Image (cartoon, rainbow, N blue to C red):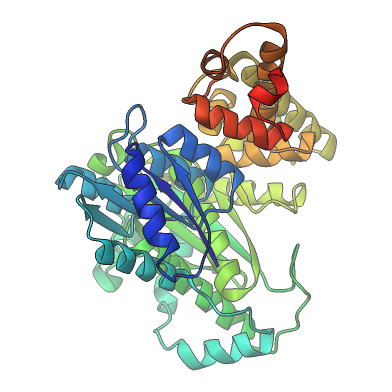
Length: 445
């Protein structure tokens, strides 16, 4: 069963869409409704949303911005955009971010429900099969040609040694159609773990089955990245896949793009989908971005170093090189040094949150940016160190302050809502009641 979030600043449209969904017969567990982007973000942070249906033009946060924030929180969330304007620029941006449909108002009810059904149908997956059934299925269905051994060898030489880079890149394009024009590059390494990881049972594979799983993971990687990003994926070792990402000048300078968040979303999507379809865990190491193909060896070293952090954080799966201050440690950092840096990052995040928790539109991305780490890594460290996730901490501060204001001042509900960072008194009341079990007016009495 699925959970859907409908977002529109016109209450009648919002209610109408929710009513259509409720009466559709689609296998829906819960339908949430929000009237602006900030309300929607609270649902996205607190609930397990499968499908986001959002209007594109809504007050202070439009649907594109909401979609970007949603993808940071859950990169695998599916989205349908609705709009009163058939604007090519909006449609292009929405599709680039992975929107599954772009519907024009006034909406046709049947068309809307067909779109929802199509999206949910593609999300549906069978109950997890046993390892034997999975391997048998892979043997039966995977017929695509593997990468040519020579191109794999050349790609590994290309990322390992800066000498002869231009010559090798030319050969790859001439003989195998692999074009590495850049000029901006990043490198990902995906380490597959079919011996069992957190949440996985130990499994024994017969000869050749590991290669089959690696082959399937390579195809999942290509399928996920093919539509939206220029990339080259290849085998690095028996249990690793390398991915070279590239951007041309226009793509890299695209307005509003945050490349660290983009890399983080790619890494988390790859990890999620490999586990979803193959039932195996993986770890992803992500390099920074550099200009010039001659730096591929540096990016390769960075992605390898990022993977080293998995030794200290075995319950985390995506690591960005820039999340750790490697320049402070000429050798592999000790457990004590890692712990000290974790505490410093979390303490700095707490200080920032305490100063700004009442700010409307505060986001995890903003807190992470101030800390010079990726949002995903900050979120992981914060929960590991404090026992609660970062947004629960923000809500705790907001609720404690709102209770104090209710009991010690004569401020009205809308004034308190404004002071603790909520867009509307109704949304504030909903969060307050969920947190304390009673409404603001009941507490006041």
